[in-house]
Image (cartoon, rainbow, N blue to C red; front, top):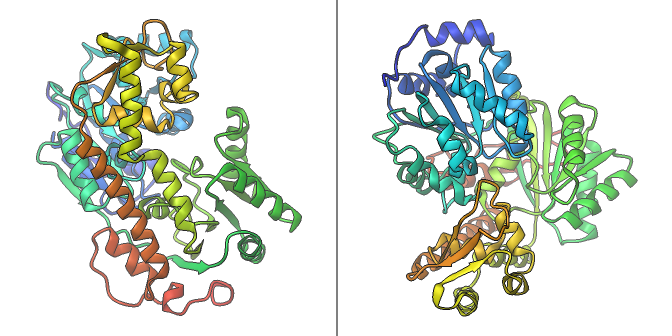
Length: 496
């Protein structure tokens, strides 16, 4: 298939369909690369217009543009925006009815779809592969590409299968992310099998953001200081807290101070989370208190502050979350609280996502004992449920389940007989593999601990916060930004 039947000029389309006179930095280089059939990797700032980088090629390249994205809850919004630009766009999600999915598949087969959004798990479904087997694919775009990396802050195992999906596809691959260290960029390139990609790196620096990390004991002292900042800072804000319990505690404390705040976390029903997000995006709600479940794909330009009750366990996550402030270019504030004792909570998170080798070996041995000589164990086997508890359901649904996901990641087990949704059924099961990669397990844990250490160093090392962040992402910068607490700026006075 010829992947470059260009029918218009990208700049002309940008002006006509999107109303912008010129591209933002990095966009045009990525677009022209994929139009010429070359793979590309773009690291653009949060809010830097990554969607344009695949929407314009979708208007110009023959065939289907397939966008692989983790943002299942936001796919419909992405479809609406793409249709508003004149594309015939659709998505396939598990939330759709069977009839809705059948209608999308029917449109695909007739060639009437320009742009299709799918989750990485969808690529694993045999029914989906059959549906697109004979379709000409013009471009494969991988959004939030940092999720593909085991060294990144948001690893998602299904992303690892995208590289195998593109095997045999002549279409170029466009990988997009807002945060990736040099190691993560190398991992993305290798995992996706990018072929001599055009790499576009935009500076991680956000000059309009003012940074501060404040030392404060966990508990009432920290809550009080957070409330004071939120109370005297005008505009819309996001407050991140590490757990569902702390989210609700912060929301109650803000409400008592007269700040109408809403809570957002994975424990809330889906319709309620969607309603909270919609009110925030429309400006009806001023403040949302959330876990890290909130934010990916949120493109609200006028967020004036992002507060962290506690620093995340990685600087990648911190940069992504704090970077949701000030996308309109106006001065905005990013303040996080920290104490040396916070490391204990960070270690608890790491022990869940990257458990100690001895514990993983023990779970693997017990699974082998249950599986017996056949080496296979049904997912609905009550013995597995007694051993793993709710881990089975979480793993099958693609959610966090540390031991089973870790075993799968190091090639200690694999799933067999499962469909797209990884639902438990008599035909689905776990097969134990003979040669687990225990060294890989140790490397992953060591990497997670190193990233936690980088967070600690940023918090306690004197000097410019901005430069500390930028150095982590591989940039050379001048000393002294004048826009962080390390350079003398105080969150309570100078900003206001």
